[in-house]
Length: 108
Image (cartoon, rainbow, N blue to C red; front, side, top):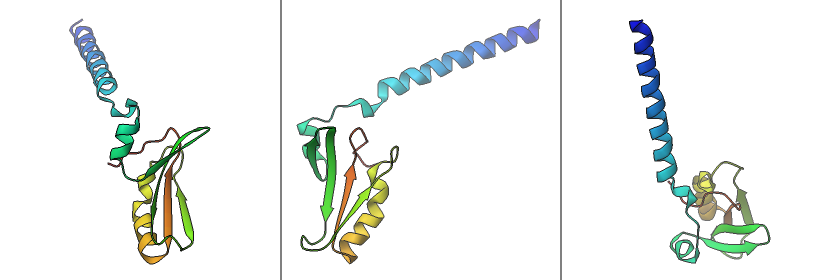
């Protein structure tokens, strides 16, 4: 009997803790912020509006050099390309990295 009560108490506490963590995540989730013109102006790079959504991009390097386009994967943010982007901008000519519509723009 005592073991069952203890297990119920632990189970109930675990459920409460999990619900509190879920609520905190949903409340504190910053990715639900809509990127408006004011927020975009504070971010690095430029934005272009296409028929499927807004695309973010950055260019670096001389304008007359060949362009290398670095595209991130579905669930990977564009800043995974930062070391490559920086190296190409210095050692090659021009580098470009994009953020696909619906993907995260900010860097960690």
